[in-house]
Image 1 (cartoon, rainbow, N blue to C red):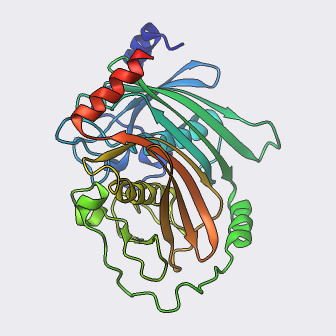
Image 2: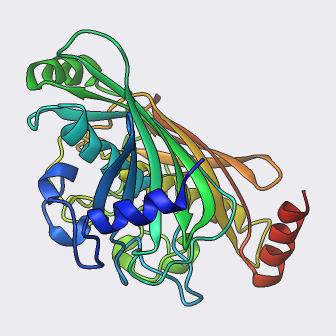
Image 3: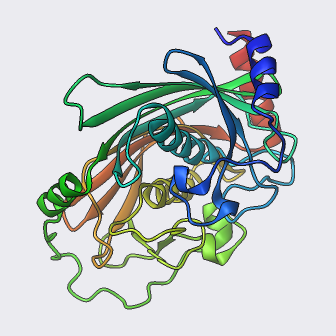
Length: 328
């Protein structure tokens, strides 16, 4: 159980303040503005308190008009926390590449912080699996608290690979996909509207029409995007796929929830690297009440899958859902 007194003492010891942030190199970011962590403090063996530095405004991770955060800020925050703690507390060398295997989060309430994330903290445990000294397989599990209130849980598994090992894995996984469904892909597919995918900027839209494959959308891989491609990558980043899943599910959910829908839980598994020079399709289909299965493919090869669950985003529907959850 998380101890608020420990949080308070560690908070002061870390010298936490809204403008502080961990070094960007330790979360594999090129720009300071993309760093979402402010400070970290050990609580016990493999267990840490990590404080946030969430931006007031951001291409993807800003706050809505009612003060709530996009749920996917949890994904990027956990990703950065895992990388940071791997380097600082599990002795992963700085030249190692991080390969994400799976991620999951489940929010019990909307995320509403003060506006800079200073009142948000992860109680996170990061464990390294036993094995060879030069092999790093790690898992994490965390509780997210905002203003002292538990709002959700998350978990992640990943591997850190030395450059020579990463080169072997990339070569083995870099198969040429079947392009039978892309005999004449459009050079510039028409993107969906920002409103359709829950965004307010055109440069945040990651999916486009896909006339080549019924029921799917084309992934837009803008390698110049300042947030999703903050640093150079030799493959489609996991966060790009996760955001594309979110957008594809929102489009599908709008067919049955015209008042709006928001993702409250996501369990994603990554199966293969996506090549930047080949088209990727993203699809979403309902698998239950307010639940969807999203898949990213390159040709016929599955890159990742996710089960996404949520609830209507209208204020009355959200209040009713939260009241029902509290009553249980």
